[in-house]
Length: 414
Image 1 (cartoon, rainbow, N blue to C red):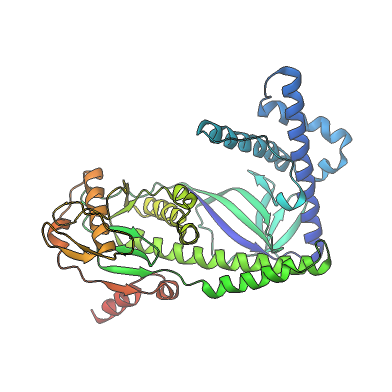
Image 2: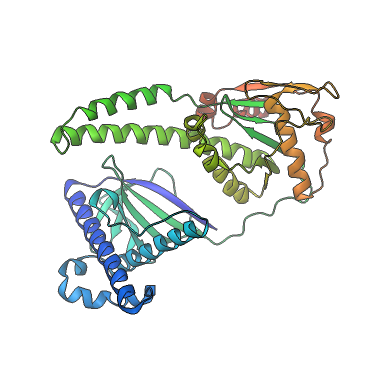
C-alpha cells in the first residue's frame, strides 16, 4: 500500500535561497523541455517519447552549468512531470473538454520538485532530525508523527506554499496487505451529506457543518487591503502573504475536520454506504455553488474511500438519484422542494427527517450493490423509530470523532 506523509521544513535563510534556486532551475528545464517537445513535433510530425527527451539531459549539462548543480533524478522527474501533464490534457480532451497547449511556467506557478528513489534520506545531525537532499542541503524537518518502521521511502516532493513555507511530502510504500472486508458485516451505516448538517447517518447522528465564517470574513478583509496596494511593491508582497495565510488556514481547518470524520466512520463500521455525487457538476450549477464547493464533499468521499480500504471496511458508492424522494419504509417516491426538511410519506404515513430518510435509502442500496450478508434488521424495519443525536463540527474536531467521549466513558464504566 502507498501513503503520503507530509511534514513542515524549517529552512534557514541560506537554505531558502538554495531551495528557490533549485526550484527555478527545475522550472527553466520544464520550459525548455516543453519547447523541445513542440520543436520535435514540428520536425517529425509526432510527439517524442519521454525516453527521447530524458536522453538529451547529459548533452544539456555540457552547456547548461546550472543543471550540474541539481541531482540527476530530480531532472528526470521534471521530464516525467511534463508528460504527466500531457496525459491529463489528453484525458480532458477525450471527455469532451476544449483544451489548448501546455503553458510556460512562471516562477509563481512552479513550486515543487521531486527526488525519486534516491538522493534523499532522513538523518540525525546536531541533535535534530534533518532531511538530507543530495546537491542541496541538510534541512531541519518537523516530524510531528513517526513514519512506520516497515515503510520504504520511495520519493520526496519538496514544495513551497504561497505563504512562503516549505513542506516535504514523502511517498511511502508499506509491504503489507490491507485487511479483507468481512463477508457478513454487522455494523453498517449509510451517510447522507448536506449543507445544513454535514453528515446524517442511519445511526441517528447528525454532524453539523464546520463554521468557517470568521475565517472567511478575515480573508475578505485581507483581500480588500491587498486590492489597495501597488502591485509589485514590498507592501503588496507582504499583504499577498497574509491573504495566502488566510487561504491556508481555511484549507487546513477544513481538511482536519474531514480527516477526523472520515477516520471515525472507517474505523467504527464494517460497511459504509455513501452517494456517488457528481460534485463537479453541482459546482457548475448556478444555485448554491459556493456552499457546495465549501463543503468539499468529493474530498470527504475520497478520504473515506482510502481509509475504508486501509481499515478493511466495505466502501459502497451508490446511485444518488431519488434517495431523498423515496420513502425508506415503503419505497414510494414523493417530490419535495429543497426547503422542506421533513419527509412525510402519503402512502404509509412514515415521517422522519429528510436527511435521515435519505441515509436509510443509501444504506439499502449499498447492501444491494455489495450483495453481502447482513445480520441486523433491514432498514425498513429499523427506520421507523429513528432518533437524531445532533453533533457539532467543533466536537468532531476536538474529540476526533462524534462519539469518542461517549465510547470512552462507557469503556471506563465497564
